[in-house]
Image (cartoon, rainbow over all chains, first blue to last red; front, side, top):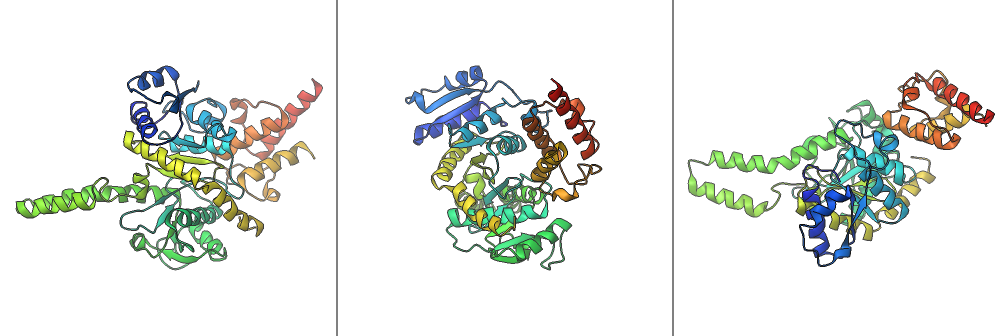
Length: 330
Length: 81
């Protein structure tokens, strides 16, 4: 039960989702707090939301790794165990990404061939046929992780964007094979010999060009780029309005156009519309919502987690990875 | 299979490095194990041998050899009991 606006907005989001969709939701956390929040709503279908106790709480100054040995009964760990046991189909967290990832790794386990999970998300608006991976789950990456990221991104592009043979590119500081960090250069070699539809390196100025359907990078770069991308719209709007302040009619028109073109999220990534990204590589559906998620984002995240379960995305990933495991590439 | 071989297998599996490069002198940094790798290895070893490794003991491990020596001593103690 983490998140900047927990528990109020999380509970409200769960109520929104339960009201508009056929879904059973478990709220995991401190029962007294959750029941008090739930009491604010007149739930017609009382059984759609249930409260599950988590006896440990992770404070801000504790390491997420403590989930494993010191706080195995914190909410995200309890939720991960519920998915592992089959009691729940998916886990959603707006709390610490690291704590969610560590809980999922430890208590749900990894899909064969994957070392660490990654966050995959579509770029939406400007690049509707492009997904990026990793968006922040792995700050430091080993070269073989980039190959697993590429496979996860490829499955995502096939399943959610209907692209039959996604073009995969490595994000680097130059198009040449020799460009980039040591890990990126080693990853280039692995991807080139992977049998995937690898088109080589692309640079930052080609992220939105549509040249690649799957852009592979480490989580440090991916997270910085994602947040920058998500912020562009609001800054572009403010900048345009300021530039046009001496021309009120044109300014009003520009404002109208911005609101029409980017009605809810300005220039945003698909992950924002979906309420967050899927954590790929763990043996179950795990959805990571932004820490600053409000109730509508949480409701969207619950709905998209449900869609991911229905689409059998984990089985798809397992079957794709199995081909590479057989070849000893992972 | 010795205790050392079993611990080496666990560490190699978690860190995804070739077990032949893990010597008793190898530090966790040298085998590119991060903090999560180390904690996962501790948990896996605890489960495998039915022992508990206190944090204050784990923090003393300077290299793989220290880790193995501690597990060997604990396993020997358990066998006596």
